[in-house]
Length: 287
Image 1 (cartoon, rainbow, N blue to C red):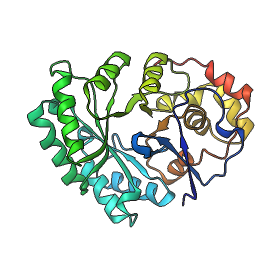
Image 2: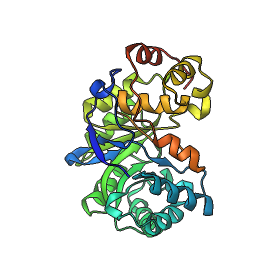
Image 3: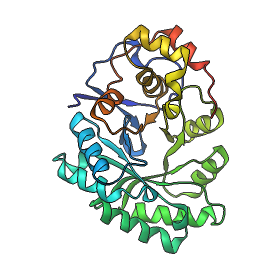
């Protein structure tokens, strides 16, 4: 079980946080508005369904995960909700992220879709509610107003976006009466997204990386494998550690086997030196 929480500020840099080895039981939280925290390692549930989804979420929570990422389009909110409720972990200790699909972006559709998500997740509120993808066919102002309303009514504790570039992120932040707390994007070691990350940092908006292992491509990078061998861990653990500890980015890798779930969660007891971090910062992978 987690024994401590360290809040990370928006510091997208290549310096290892605190410059010291962290105990394996340490759990990071990414700073959100209102002094709340987003557990930095979450379980991604895309393509998980049925009993496999329930089993993965149950196992993740038993390991110590406290952030579960789902979405309306994944079709597994019901399974996620059942697993959370049956886990025995108090609801207020589990951070649930879900996402509104673009077909529900009109004012008349957004709230009913959120209410359905709440029923399926078996929860009175969503910790972080995101707009899943931009939708050019609906004015962003209309969607943001509807998103603000569900937060004001307590259906969501935090709101944000997903897959928004720098310009759209700035626009969303200018339209909301609340705070855009998070932008979930495809991001991994070797990715180059300086504009959106700089914009997010300037807005006080956190970043969550989906596909943080580049769909497995990090395992084939010689620099990542060399650093992993040096520290006696896997390439995937090095890739996630770099994002979480050195860049202050939350990650939501998908996993279903107990071994992989545990490995993805066990990334804190590593401290890369300047040479390691420089090598990773110079890595280029196709986005």
